[in-house]
Length: 360
Image 1 (cartoon, rainbow, N blue to C red):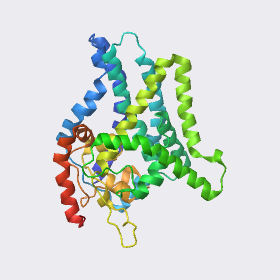
Image 2 (cartoon, rainbow, N blue to C red):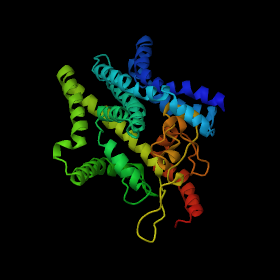
Image 3 (cartoon, helix red, strand yellow):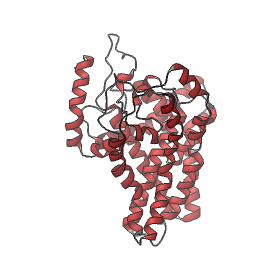
């Protein structure tokens, strides 16, 4: 067990690999006179090579003991790694928006670079931001908000914690995909309702605490997003503002596709009083594939995350009793984009889980 923990302690630095793939791809494209194709390297690695490596490397079902958990929580290395994402992603975002304006890139290359940067935005800015906003330390929550705001999705900090985590696996939750719902319908609902839901949740908080409107947290995160947009517009012009907006949209879309597969078809049983039972590991899909879990700070141990939302990534546990996904997130994102194939793979799993849980 100690060997596994020591290995994972340093292997979490793999999350930095996607951050270097866009410039590496551009450099390789330049070297081989294939600039437009080099811009696609990140997309090809994440959605092509990673699923293969997941299958080869295999699963990780090892959990730390209580004593090991205490040692892991005392180790400052783990929060430092997540906080490093703020300057690392910011640097890539500045480089990337500038690189999109490179006159030597064709239309194919520009699209590829935007897709690559959006992929990294989802995997690093939003995923690490998600990890940080759940923490009790104010500095970590602020860093998480900054990461989310950098891709224009600061409202996620509010809606996710006060909305999704409260209502997950119920009809009230806009981020729980219904059985039979395709990913495109789900994306429309997420984009059209989640920002409004964040606003309503924050307005309700201000009302409960009798606070004035300028205490609205959304104003801070939306203001930071506008500041990013203004800097890119003043520095590089309107075309680069569009590039920034497209990167944010792509990163957010990737987040919502992951939301789609994390809870697809799962429901909490309604109680006699009209409420719902407590959130447990049974209300999120678990995926134990080691490599993607290292890249995403164990986001795929999502069942434990929802059962214990404040639990830090280094001590998230594999839950064997939870519903299990058949592959890692990268493979399943691609599968979700083809609804008939998605339903063929996932609907029988949902039906088996509902039978086991006694849910019609």
